[in-house]
Length: 593
Image (tube, rainbow, N blue to C red; front, side, top):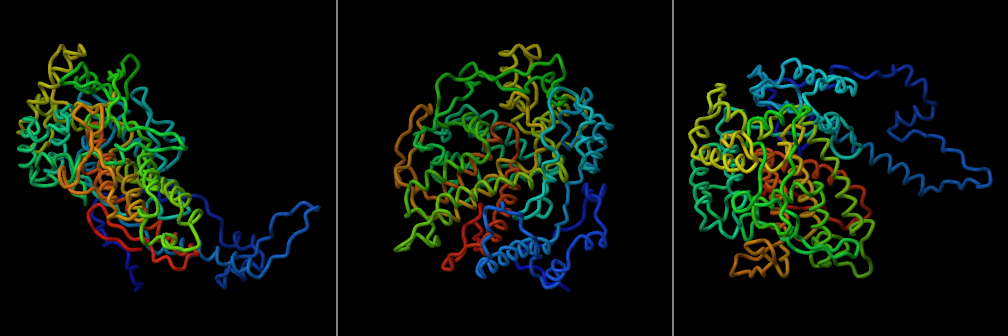
């Protein structure tokens, strides 16, 4: 029996719904062995038999440029380059494709109430048309562009890139070859807890972080969330830990990472960290969305012709991130990886002292890094990791098809008003948060002239269309965070203390000094990078479009892709003194490559 690679995660159970891939349903045409071999010359066949690269004639050069004979060194390098690529592909091939389990909601509920269906036709309860959902499953099974083009849509919104998860990658793991977490089933205690957290986040959007120790709504949220058996956040909750994650450094100091507060320089242009934020709902004239049933149903259907998508009301005063509303708006304004580009540029500006001690040029007397182990190398790696979206979208569309939070809010609403007997866990149905949400939505609906000024049990979200038009699990900002935080923690010195830390004032209009030892502990590279991962992923939760489980799964997925990518990179470096990358994962586990 072949020995399992020492770096492989434990074997997953195959229990659960078997997922049909497009290759299994509609395999591509392959050349026969005879036709394939017949197209190769004898030298190529001999080379393959010996494990050496086949000899392929180079393209013709113009007659006036004489061909330069290949040196022995060049020949050896060409062979080595081939071997490195071949070995990397072989290593990934040997890992296999890990079995993918689901939460079984798609089989459990024929009306698909636990799965993503936004943009397709829906009935008055917001339940998807069965034939439309089956057509989507068929298109996912075939993987054909024209089958998606034939899907019946319910409105103007288009589905977001279902085929993105089938993209092949020539570096790192294949999209189907990584482990994926299982999202909590609709009726589970964990699902109840994470939806309750989103309801409380909505109620707390306009509370400044500075007020958390004394604010009564924060105290009520802490009391309620502490009683959930399925809550996956830090416990016990306190004003310092609520709406955070239990990663190294994240529970310490200000809620917001230094990398989102400090000014930074891009191509010589100094950029400050304030941004435009929607107006407060509770203290201003701001609004949220999906607070009325008609708007919610229009969103599930993809906003049919005749329905309106309302823009947010923006605060004319730019502000630093100082509450959940500004945290959510920041996570909606970035392009997934840009906060990590920003962090990289800030860290590079701190000089060699901030680099990992493993960087071979940090202690060099005669050399400095650039194309390798310098800024150019780091930014290239950051760009290469953008491919983690392939892995995320494979999980979103081809495995889980998990419903978005706004859809879950509709299930809660219809259960509470007696329109449907959905299996929502009683820990949520009995929570005081629902009556508070009803009153909050009544305020918004009166302000917007919706629902006859009546309230609802729907989840108020900041996104005018309710949620993006792709499934929820795993979260895009989270797998981006996991991969980039892993890279940056490996590249820089994790325990390096950041100089001159700051914190936002109560209104977010200015920054104040953060004094280590008085305001909290010193702030380190790893802690603030982990906090950045938290800010960008839980910021999407505060925005109303993801759950905590989406974030945790995305972190692990992003880290796994980064680890396998960096491991594949390691043999390509000429710096023999390099001891390999090392960093600490977001769950506190040390990794050495």
